[in-house]
Length: 287
Image (cartoon, rainbow, N blue to C red):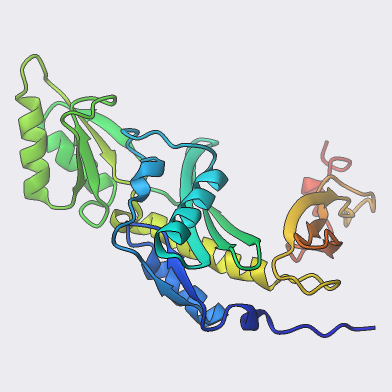
């Protein structure tokens, strides 16, 4: 018998949520969640999310990516007294010969004791760093990483914070900053890196937007036993059949989700829209 539950939107419509951030992420997060869930979203001016860690390592990240996103959301709830907090957190890590940007967006619903997480990974990132010995070398590096659309950070060396300057977005400021560092006593180089804070990195902002869209899809995945939104990913299950030999492969056949309220589980077949495995990806046909 089919069970009838309130619409997903009814749980959120006309409630006010806080986005805990200071780097303009609300520009891509808020419109999506306001439209999809009916939320009203605010950004408190007084919140300082740098306390949870910075990309420039002057403040080490406190906890895992998920823990930091959760703590940001809870801090927004604490500061505002609201019962829905939203936050995102990104991390960059090696992926083959390049780097991957992994972003998560988390929504914490204190009223219902629900936590939802969406994510996105992209190899399209401009993360880069270099040492330069001249201003002209700095300008060449800047051009390669999308400056001035993407911001830069300059410092004396990779571990320096004393002479660090973030958020450089124009050529005159870049030339002046690099020039001053090159003139420091006993120093003949400057360290440059891309500023990976979201408001100064449009490439990263695109991945945050994709993670927000994934968050919406996560919330819409409701439990058919109790109606709770947001069944959570538990595991991927292998067993996709090869189109050539007909044997089961290590490729994903289904994904198992679990309800965070009643712990009911659900298997979603063919999550990537692929119903048979290409022989090129079959461990039997192509060992």
